[in-house]
Image (cartoon, rainbow over all chains, first blue to last red; front, side):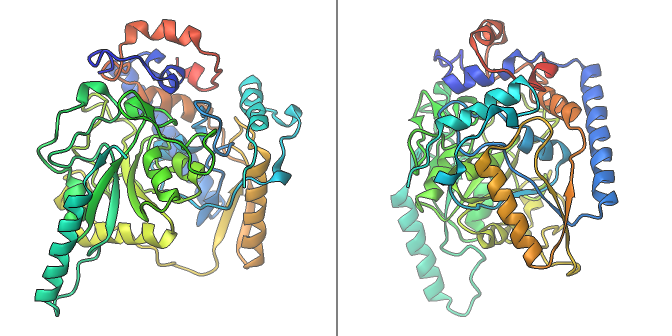
Length: 126
Length: 308
């Protein structure tokens, strides 16, 4: 459709680049559905074993990022895969005391460090 | 805003007033007279649904999307549609048709996406209740960026049939879902109750034949888990502060709050990314050029790389 409109991809489409993920054969697709069931079963156990009514969880590791820099959807997409309802409850704004701290706090690898370091580039405004 | 039909909305509101005046004893419909904004993917006859793609420009729709029809039947007033990213599969509502939606609180940061036009409009109170859609976070991300409420319901409660989409029909492993974005939780609840009242399955055959939306508590001694991170990305300081503040308030109110570590989600993330590209994104883009684009990017994805 982008080609049909003879238009360039916008920056965030280039960066997200879902099209680089290969398509699935029918067999692949069955395997994806089976993997989804495994995840659903694991989270059912998580829910039942902890006797949960609800889960308080960040919707993202970030607040609003600089333009075209939002890349992390692991926090939200999980609930799409599981098909659990999820609601965003606002808690206020970033304030001056929320200043970025050291990169050593990002302990999950290079992708985490990169995303964590973006925090330096947002400055609270009144 | 992508499509603006205020004149039509005012006429509609006047008709609703007249309807009420002529039948003062008839109960009002659940959304009587309530203005509701819609993400651009919802169809309104006479207006485009470009979803940020030039190839769909100047091709007005001829029918209402089932959800738009449902809202009208419940008494709502539709008055505008709102911006999305090119392809609707990014978190920045930027495209070559309408340009970029800016964050009203700070133009240097993103308004989020894909329901970013809704997020910004509601943040400015240009709408008090809008409709977004969400397949990966497209209701929730702009809600985060704009400080508003946003609900991603489970699939099958809110009609999402026949909205404009860019994925090949029939590929939905992880299905998109429509849901409310609003300035209060009460408004989200009102929207969902309207789905019950309208019997959503009459508008979208894939909706459940159940009135499943029920927010009454089944017991009062609530037990709520709290997980501070997903094991892949560390929350920034303001996110950690907000979580701590919420935890403190919940504990103070007598909630049984239990600290938890999330199960390993790496397989789930990889599965979900692959579900989004079951057709190799051939409909939305041109896969041949994708590799060269990828080498230009500097972003490192975990999970995403696994999916590739």
